[in-house]
Length: 405
Ligand SMILES: Cc1cc2nc3c(=O)[nH]c(=O)nc-3n(C[C@H](O)[C@H](O)[C@H](O)COP(=O)(O)OP(=O)(O)OC[C@H]3O[C@@H](n4cnc5c(N)ncnc54)[C@H](O)[C@@H]3O)c2cc1C
Image (cartoon, rainbow, N blue to C red; front, side, top):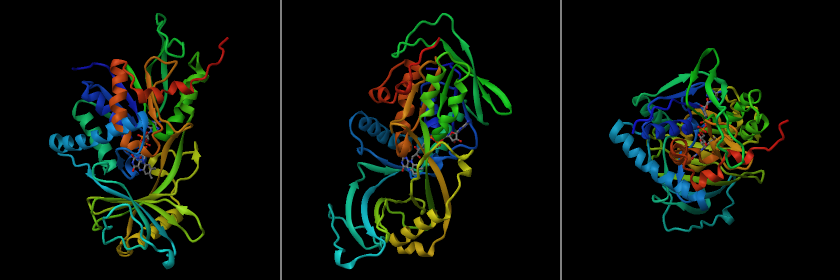
């Protein structure tokens, strides 16, 4: 059913793209995505795209499971209806233990399955454990997925504006009396999004999906609000965790496997890089998460790259698969995992505001959980329905009560 709401989504990562896609599925065509740099310039274009059905428990587990199943359906629809291939496929997933210097004496190959690893895995494996099979693990190309979702939104009448959002204009609704669960009325609504060097955008509903940069929206609420401290704090709890990745391009083994490593380095540390062959012949390798920070680069395209981290990933990958010794690393990159203070994403309406929503902080599962996030936030925005997992993710848990005199 057609919905005439004007929707403005800030952030063109997989979360913003999925929210826009699901709103467009529900009949909204007046959708604007405001993206500072380019679609999928952050983690959404640089991550592994690994998907697991049942690696979490409780309501989060159900949420992830629904997202996992939705990826499979969506990939089919994108191919059939829009001729877009997002390189989705099911995988067998292993944890493998490897030492930088193999100790022949303790080199006992242990296994919890009867399968052998593909021949191109040439490292001396100390232990291997199957973590998932083709019913429970899969992969998608995250950048292709994000761009595909945006293409569908545009096909249905939506648009992308490249520009840096930097504030809101608000109005106060004098007749509003409805109270949220924190017993606060929400008489304030955003009416325009301010964009650096461009005309503001008017909308009925705004969604902040700025990934690790979401904390940068906190000051937008500080001057205009009666609950100013409280509103900002719901966003200030997001930060970024930098991680590196490299891609060996083309002509590599394409079998549908994923490998999580327990890599004992010569200095005694256990490292945990991940190795994902892709169906186009690329091999993606990532690892080395750093500390939380709110000191992020301005753009997803300018995250400083540490050559040593990339070289370390290359050496480990070459030990796992000796054929990689003859291959060049064509992509070296870094990006930020979006992280909240308590490790749970913030997804929902900002408390103290009438029409501003947020979806951020998906950490290392943003590609997997993007589809359930888009679907369930759409239900909340259009119908006011809140799912059990969104209850946990309510940004209001960071809403601070202060006295306003
Ligand atoms: C190395 C690595 C590997 C990963 N592997 C996996 C995996 O295998 N499976 C999985 O499920 N997840 C994985 N993740 C996590 C996943 O990539 C992220 O959770 C997800 O991409 C976050 O999406 P997002 O849209 O919230 O943020 P982002 O992708 O960071 O997008 C935010 C967007 O907002 C834009 N923006 C910011 N500020 C503004 C502004 N002021 N105005 C306009 N636009 C703005 C940015 O330019 C950016 O494009 C991985 C992450 C990393 C770092």
